Length: 373
Image (cartoon, rainbow, N blue to C red):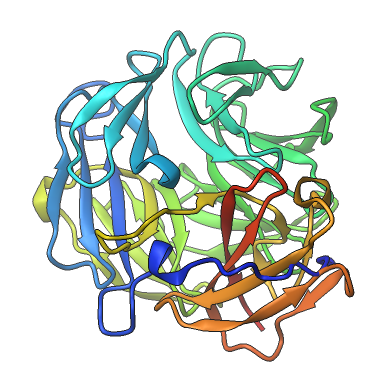
């Protein structure tokens, strides 16, 4: 994949990431509790899985996913029972208002390449919904529904993939939402999260299969990547490239290395009453005096690898320049995508980095990528 030169327009490290002397990110975990019955909670830990606290415990009803809107310092939580996406203060966890309502059991949500929030529906017509970040409903992106949908990601050319838990498949849609049929129809017992590896393989967390499974770019089953993961759901990546996944079967949050080997429990079983982790989200820690915070926005593909490209250069106007920071906030370098369509990150160490840029409309945006050699 290739990336166009973004002149790294001073993504202000102090706005989004802490200094070396401070904690660089926090970990947020959605706890589905007894599924359709409480207790439900959103937990918060430091990057070592320590200093835990109950961040949100009210106004939840079978929470499913967590999404931070950094530009206004708020956090969104999907609630399957009530069909709502609730908005909370990102610092205090205090409930603010309903971001969106009348959704058919919202589960996963992700910012798309068009800067809209894509939301999956567990029930109802199963179509993928799109919202502006102010909560305005845009449309149903897909004409075809995916029942019990609970995982989504985009490939290098902008095709959208959605997993169906009960259907035991992953469906593919074009960049315009056209139905391209089932991408995977076999070797799955109950898929949840999905993500693309650096070589284009699709990784699928199989909740009922107690595994993470690998499929090639044509949807062919390539084998089991992670074993012994009961009720896996909720995924994010450590700065060194390790994979962090919730395990409902053990009521813990586990760490696996890049080869799929188990490392340790980042959050041990039952910590702070943890029962059923179903979303794991890392958030860079920002100082309280930050003048602005960049919005999370997917503009680079893939999200894991060492060769990256800009997926939607049209939103940047004439200037296609970006800046790269590590998780400590240290400036790593600039990318000029106007000169070279691909960013070669093979000179960097494995780990998490943030690419920051400025859109044509003046908004600061950032994207987290995992460099993996």
